[in-house]
Amino acid sequence: MEIKDDQFKEFFQSLPEKSATGGNLLANYRGFWFGAHLLEGTITFQKHFKANDTDIILATMPKSGTTWLKALTFSIITRNNHSVAQSPLLFSNPHQLVSFFEINLYKDGKIPDIDSIPCPRIFATHIPCQCLPNTILDSSNCRIIYLCRNPLDMFTSMLHFSLQNGFLPQQPQETMSMDGLFESFCQGTYQYGPFWDHFLGYWNASLKNPQKVLFLKYEDLKEDTNGYVKKIADFLGCAFSSEEEEAGVVEEITSLCSLENLKNLECNKRGETKSFFKAKHSTFFRKGEVGDWVNFLSPSMANRLEKLVQEKFGESGLTL
Ligand code: A3P
Image 1 (cartoon, rainbow, N blue to C red):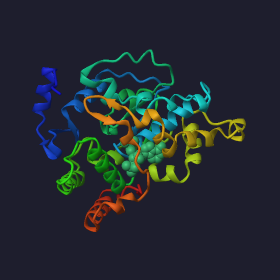
Image 2 (image 1 turned 135 degrees about the vertical axis):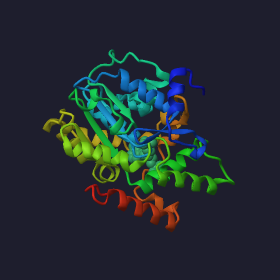
Image 3 (image 1 turned 45 degrees about the vertical axis):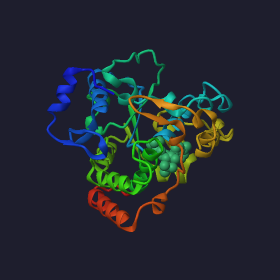
């Protein structure tokens, strides 16, 4: 798809650092890699978005559990609007209920009418903390929830997602394409990469202002989903009452949003996300296992990534 805005095209071309890994031309913007479409959406969002104090922003790197975080947060926030048996999640993919700033709302340089969205508004983004507009970081009391995931599993998930949606060549070149993707993952030259600066941007923001940024890990969410559902509600200022807890509302939300449940719904078996790239709804729900990388990465790949993790996060206090 062509970029139509000539001024933006010129700006993209003027960025000095480019990378063509994965067949996509990416440019480095403020230390992160973006394709032209994503950067156009990102810059339009930066210029035009005005945060409300009640806004909730879900931030992730792709393939770290975004779909799950959307489903959980949507369910927590709207729990008084409808019963679980009537949840919109039963009829719509989570990405249809919570939009991404740069992929959906501000795509193609459009300025959306978001003032009509009822408060609290829930938005999502893959944009790094370092590229968020001041209206989010400094001049509003909106909240950010960041979810990160072990990079070895994130890479494994990305590999499957890319193959299933035809973003990478299929067999017989599968190994070659895996090698290419792996190399760009380790170099950081893929959309929104590098993952280490992405994680650290939100990690440092959460240390600086824990009331504003809640930093979560996919693995913790898997281990104690009920506990984290309560933690998210507390953070967002809508804690579960003791009556709700006794009535089992927390567990209901956890099971509504479980991979097994969402994966088997018709709305997630069919259809695709519509943006400048198309992804089948079904491909957002795969295994959801911690440590699945062991089935796909060779020992040398795992070793390289583990060393990278050690090198990049060793001093930060962030354990993955
Ligand atoms: P796997 O490919 O390892 O299975 P994202 O939503 O950021 O694209 O991340 C997708 C990953 O989250 C996939 O991981 C997917 O299976 C997993 N996932 C999706 N929905 C989930 C859920 N409800 N519970 C746990 N994991 C989920």
